[in-house]
Image 1: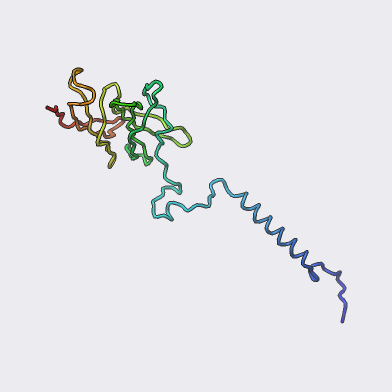
Image 2: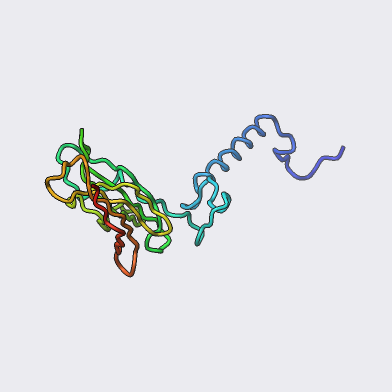
Length: 194
């Protein structure tokens, strides 16, 4: 056997401890690489993998959460109730708004409703941008829906102060749609109950 003129190299006669140390070092490098990902990297599936359209590589914005909004509704200590809510892109900007029907939390009776449009810009808290029905109008909202950029509801009210608050005697079908820079109301026939 001829000896080499080169010095002995450690890896030519590796022991199990050497391989264990190499594996631990590689695991540390892989773990460190996982922590050093770009800010936008995630391990979740993108919307396009679920069959939904994504514009400009970003996920669609979530509709504003009405539970995070300070409504212009004075309920004292009773608190408020979000009776109904529905999302929809009402102004055609590609971001959904939320329409919420809200009233004071009453132990009994039928408190008047308010209908509010909520919006939210990225990173900001949701906020009210329009009041479609003010609770001061003393109306109850039923048959509420948001479809195709249009808000519709049935408004129940009272023809006079003599009508008991339990039994509304006026019924109006109403809808609202964004036109230009405001919501425009279209009212159907107003009916009086006998």
